[in-house]
Amino acid sequence: MAKADRLEKMDLRRGELEMEYRAELIAALEVTASGKWGLFDHNGDRWTRAAIAPVIANLAEIGEGIDKLREQLGLEPFELQQRFLAARGPVGADAVGEPKQAKAWLDTLAREDADS
Image (cartoon, one colour):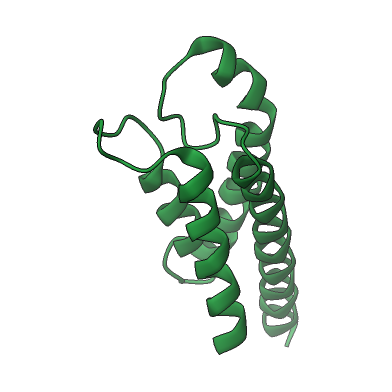
């Protein structure tokens, strides 16, 4: 019974961290959608990177905690974090700007919330 209780507590904590990650990501996406670049690191500018570094570090820290718990629970890595990490980095000249990309992310997350 103790193991089941421990696993339940771990799963509750995982859920809390996933909600925190989502909230932090949405807050960062809203800032980016309003015109502040850097979240997706499209330009690779060191000043922009330095300005957004605390946000990225916070998301990474929460995401690492989630993935540790998910691993202990026998679950796949945190999909939202994997999608976000895959969306970061250099893009082609024809790619949409970060504010439009952030708006698209916000729309997608809102649809996912409505579907669940």
